[in-house]
Structures are given as C-alpha cells and as structure tokens.
Length: 358
Image (spheres, rainbow, N blue to C red):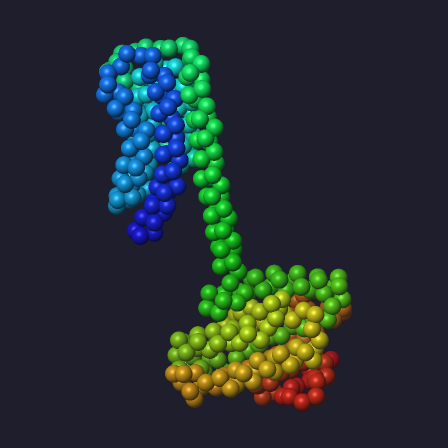
C-alpha cells in the first residue's frame, strides 16, 4: 500500500509542473481563439480557473487521495474533457484545435499508453458534446495572425517541459537499472560478489592474464567447522561470522581484487598482478585476524580458516582449470589439520603452510 502510494505521489509530482506550464500557456491560445466570439463572462472565468487554479487543485486532489496514481489519471481525463470543451467552444479553429488536442493526447500516451489514449479521446468527445449542448455546433475554418502567434508558446515551451520530465525519468530509470544490476551480482548477506558474478569475472580475469602474462593468484577460503558453529551457536551467530569474514576481506584487499561468496562458508578471491609470496602474506594476515577475533556475544567462539592458493599458469586451458587447482590446494589444507594455507608451489619461508605436490 505504502509502496503504491509513493509511486503515485511521484507520478503526480512529475505531472504537476508540465500541467502548470501547459495549461497556463494553453489558455493564451484558447483565449485568442475565443476573443472574436461573443461568449458569456462565465466562459472567461472558467478559462481563468482552468489555466491558473486547476493545476494546483489537481495536484492537491491527487496527493491527498488514498490512491494518488488513480487520482492523477482521473485528473488527466479531466484535462482531456476540458480540452474537448474548449476546442468545440472556440469552434474548432484548426490551428489551435490541433495544438491543444495533440498536446493533451501526447500527455495521455506518455502517462498511460494506449488505454489512457482511448479514455482521453472519449473524454475529449464528451467535452465537445457538452460545449455543443451549451453553445451549439459551429466551425471556424481559418486562423488569424494573432491566433498564430498565440500558439507559438504552446508549440515550443510545453514540449520542452515534457521533454525535461522524460529526460529526468530516463535518468532515474538508468539509476534504478544500475542498482538492480548491482543487487543481482551481490550476495545479500556479505555484500560481496555472488557465485554467478564472481564466476563471470573469473573468466574475464583469466583472459586478461593470458593476454598480458601477468602474475596473479587465486585463493579459496573455507571457514573451518562452520556447520558446528551453526549447530552450537545458531544461524544468527553463523551469519555474523560470514559477515565478519567479508568485512576483513574488504579491509585487507586492494580495490582491484575480486572477492566473492562462492557458496555456504566458502569464499573466493582473485589477486591480479600479485606474486604468490605477496598473496600468501595477505591471506596469512587474514587468517590471523580472524583467528584473533572475539565475538561480543560468544567470546569463546574461534574462527579458523583453511585457504588454498593457486597461481595463474600458462598451461591452464581455461579458467576452470585455475579454479580446480585452487580447490585442490584447499582440499589439502582441510585434510592436513585445517587452519592453514596450502599452495601449489613452494611456500615462502615461515608461517603455517602445506605444499601441494605437482
């Protein structure tokens, strides 16, 4: 309900200013067409109301309604009704009739597509009938020089106002599209890349490594005994562990490094333009930081990581071969005591590591 109301209010705000401009300058064109005719004073009073007060009244009616979007669509039909009434009242002066009716039709199509176009056309016909009942049927086949000049503001300023509204709407849609694209590529719990997005970027990074022959390292990270953490402390604590790891990843990685949640308690990182020793140092620092972390609600909880590292090799036929190499290293780390780093080549001196034989 609140979401629909918010969208309706936004819709009413978008139409508010174009309606002020359109009806304001449109009343000038209508007044020039009515001027040669002998019409009662209330017609001029109604034109003044339609051109100056109605835009503000319509905005209040829509913003105060329970369903602003529906109310604003009704207001657009009232606009069409008034347009049909004025067209018949100034006796279908061709230049001004085409100007007024075409601008209102453009409004209806832009705001509601074919359905609102048809409803608007019906409202215009109704307005014509009301005018004919009041003043009779008459036609003025030509326009004066004054009437021609009176149409110019409507033909120039109003399309500009509508164009600005459409431009701003296009910008907002583009921003929403980018936001949705980012959400579709992001893991909701950790804020890192999700499985699919990381796999897509893995293939891109692999091709870059192949083309540029740049040393790069992949790391697969697994939280040791994560199921036991969930079983012992509950899934809320387990989720906080996953978030803490993602926080430390972002804190320890460079801007160009790619970190993602591969699935469950497994994370994956690509470290482009980095040697194996540098990558080992980064991952060792991460492992130690998590090992020293104490959860405020369960201080006895310990977070330990098993990590597998694999450097890019020209012998890899595709990105999956690189990923498999890192997975083999992780498998060794998990099966030789956990809480350590396993690499696919001799590790740097010091630290808790396991060498994975070729």
